[in-house]
Length: 233
Image 1 (cartoon, rainbow, N blue to C red):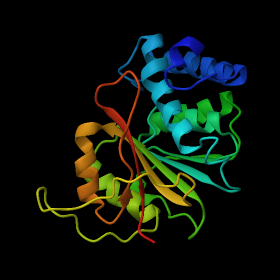
Image 2 (cartoon, rainbow, N blue to C red):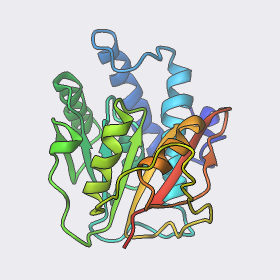
Image 3 (cartoon, rainbow, N blue to C red):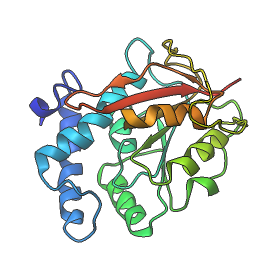
Image 4 (cartoon, one colour):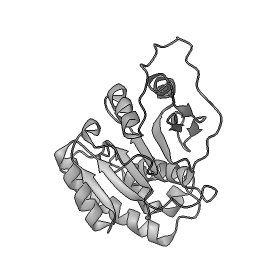
């Protein structure tokens, strides 16, 4: 597993590999009776799901940025089988984790996963992103989204949770400008999207007041990127 993860995360430690092995075993067992992921091959699960999530974790919580601030919450919308929220939590266990998943059976899997991995400071919210109460104003928050349905509805909900009142999105080709300069990763509130490169412009149109970083290409993918945006202050 360490060799498979090497392109995404340098030198993953033994405790992380042990946790991911437990995760993989449980995921394969549940996936046999519940469609958690269309990816069935264990090695592809490691690279496409674990690897992508850990690549984002290393970018968001790099040594340069320093460890997460006390009380920093990772809010993962549409968690499904737990990606990217659970691998990011395993990478930085000091984070407070909230997994938002509207499908009851998937939320049940996430509860079992949290128990198996001994995840502390972890909440599973079995509901829609639109129904989750906004965190306390000013609290440090990283909100993640990966492969969610209803992209156009979920992004405005994400902006609300980040405390941003967005003006209406402009139509494509309307000349919306977006910042392409790198942003400080330790910003107290930010949105991290793990999406296809073809969705980048749509994200900028939906949240035009956000300051967006340049998309960061995910290894071993021709079209997947990490896109980070900070809400207006």
